[in-house]
Image (cartoon, rainbow, N blue to C red; front, side, top):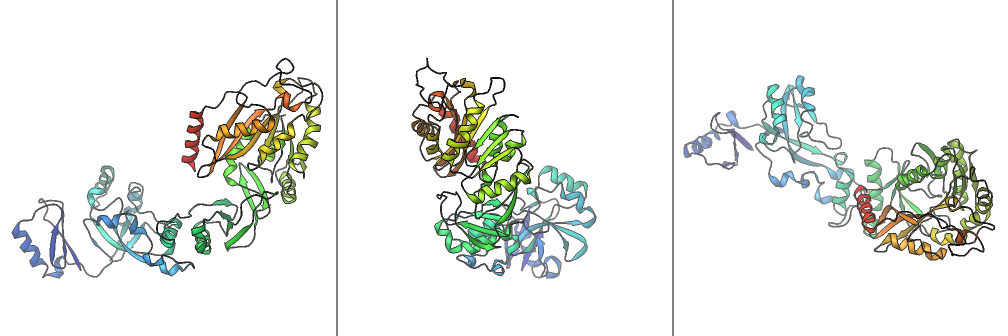
Length: 507
C-alpha cells in the first residue's frame, strides 16, 4: 500500500512519498514535527490512504521505469520459437492526468507531446471511480512530475482549470501493444541483431534473415504479418540471385502461399508472380531518376527489363522502347504490364539473352537510327540493370556497327549497373567497365551511387557515351580519325563520399 501526502499550500510543491511506514522526501528536508504528523496520519487510513484502485497520485516514476525497459515484453519470452501471444502480458505503471470529460478534446492537441502513443492503446480512458472524469495517458519517458510539463502545456491546463497533478495508472499491456522490433528484441538471443525491416512487395514481406535468426524464422514471419496491415505473407530468400533468370528460391515463413501480387511504383501498376521474377522496391528512386533523363521522342534499349519498371515509365513519356528479358516469366509479365499501363503500342518486347539482344535487335535499330539526318536523330539510351554481371555484357558493343561513325553527340548513352566492395567503388566500377571496352573511362563517365546493399557493398550506375572507336569497326583511337565523346564532369571522391553518406542516412 502506498500513500502520497501533499504538503500544505505555501510550503512547497514537492510531494512526500510514504511506503511501508517509511518516509522519504524528494530532495528536501522535513521538520521533525512534520515527520511526526505524517507518522500519525499513517494510522488514519481513511484520510490520506488510497484504497485498492488502479491509479493513485504520484510525484515521480523511478528513473529505471522511465527507460525503454518499461515497454519491453516480459523477460521469459526470451528464446521463444513458436509464437505465443498470451506470454506477452505485462502490467506497467504510467502517469495519467485526470480531467473533466467535457474538456478532453480541447486538451489532446496541446498535450500531443506528452500523451502516450503505443500500438493499440487508447490515450483517453474513463476514470474507474468518477464517470464524469477522464484519464489522459501520459508518456512516462516525458512526464514524471507536474514540473515535466512545458510552459505552453501548463498554460493550457491553467486556462481550462485543470490541476497538473499527476497520478499513476496500472496499464495492462498485451502482444498487440508491443512493436515488432520490441517483440523480436525480447525473443532473440540478447545482443543479436534484430530483423525489423523488410522489402514490401504488394501483400508480401520479403526478408533476408541471417543465420542466427533462422531458428526463429516462423515466429519472425508471423510477427511481421501481425504488425504490418496489408501484409498476409512473409518469405525469406534462401539463396543468392545468381541464376540466369535473376530470381531466387524463397521459403514462406508464415501466412499465404500465394505469390501473385500487385504493386504500385511511381504511379504505375505492376502485376507478377514474385516467386518467378525479380522485383526490388528499393530501386523506385533509381527507376524515376533514369526516366527523367529521357525526353519525348528518345529511344531506350532496356537490356534486362524484368517486368518493366524502366520500360513502362519511359514509354509513357512518348519514347520508343525496346525491352528485353531472358526469363520467360519476366517476358510474360512485361507484356502483361505494358498492356495494363496502356503502353503496349510503344514498347517492343524481346525474350533473348542480353548479348544476343545487343548484337541483334539493338544493332539493327542503331544502324537505322544513327544513319538518320541530324535533325531526325533521337537521343539513344541503353539501360543495363544486372548489377552482378552487366559490365561483362559491355563487350557486345565492341565494333558492333559498320560504316562511317556518326557525330559523337548522337552516340548511345549507356547506364550500366554494378556492385562493388572496393574502398573506392566509383573508381573500381569505372576501371572494370573500361577494361571490358578496352578504353579509359576516366574523363568521359559519371558514376552514381544507387544504394548501399550490405556493409561494404555498394550498388552503382556508371553512365557514359560509347566512343566511336569502340562502337564502329575499323576505327582507331587516333583523334584524327573520329570525334571523341564530349567530356563529362567527373564526380570527385569527396562528392561521391557525400552522396554515399546521404543515401546511408535515408536507409
